[in-house]
Image (cartoon, rainbow, N blue to C red; front, top):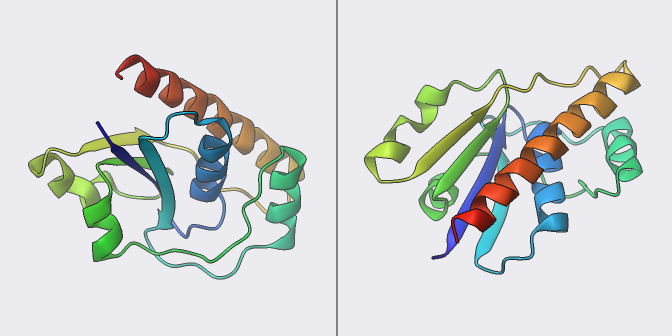
Length: 138
């Protein structure tokens, strides 16, 4: 069965992009497609965020994506990678037989490099666990 996985955070500037980039890096299953988006379309990425992600071998460059009707229709699993996105936004997912996963990860403080590293490590761990679950359910 084909799975369309959507990682969502507040602005699609860090958390959801890290999750998407890392999932792309480790995913071996061609039936699983992945995208990321922000609840609100954010401003451009900071150079610091791009550098920090690069330290972990992740490329988060690219266009910021906001939630839209086409992307909501495309996905069948939403992972909220944020503590500042209300799950109620995705309440209809269950109505349509789609899954919602909630990870309450706080946003990065651009002034503290260690905070970003810690958040990336937390996201990587959660994505690894999700990937194992998806592989097991195949």
